[in-house]
Length: 194
Image 1: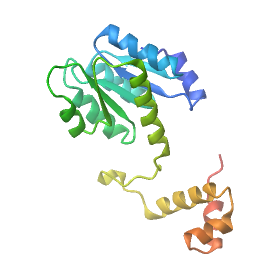
Image 2: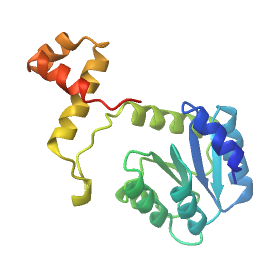
Image 3: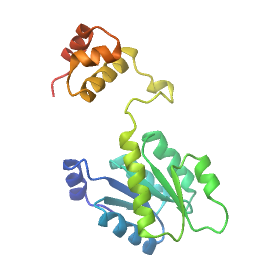
Image 4: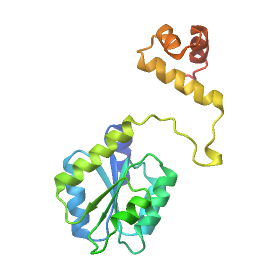
């Protein structure tokens, strides 16, 4: 498992992704961790469903690599991961002789790899999914009633984002949004001080 000092180090460098590696075979787990660390990623590891669920609650995880055949089904970890972090990529893996891919994809895994796989395939898949998640806009449609935000809050976030995209040009942002520029200025004045 990753030590607290390494987690603190990662918080000071948000560009460095933290990958949760959930694998009950120690050799396979070590192989994946070495491959991901060689690409500049930090790793936290779990050998069981319970450990994985605990780490999902405690660590700020960027992506998860999840063995489907643990002490219980990997579907349990995937469900909690998607509930806590809907945009976090999850790569399901399995060496089971029967078709697991369908089960993983139906349960909303972002990718699936059959064991054995190369370090290059693993790291490229994880990097691609992280990059895709980074490019996904941060405003999401609510999935549960408790996720619903006031329309004004969503509007404010969207306007601020447009201004940032247009390098702070409020007049251009107002034109692109089809609103009066005084509305843009008013929204930006409401921005809390950092």
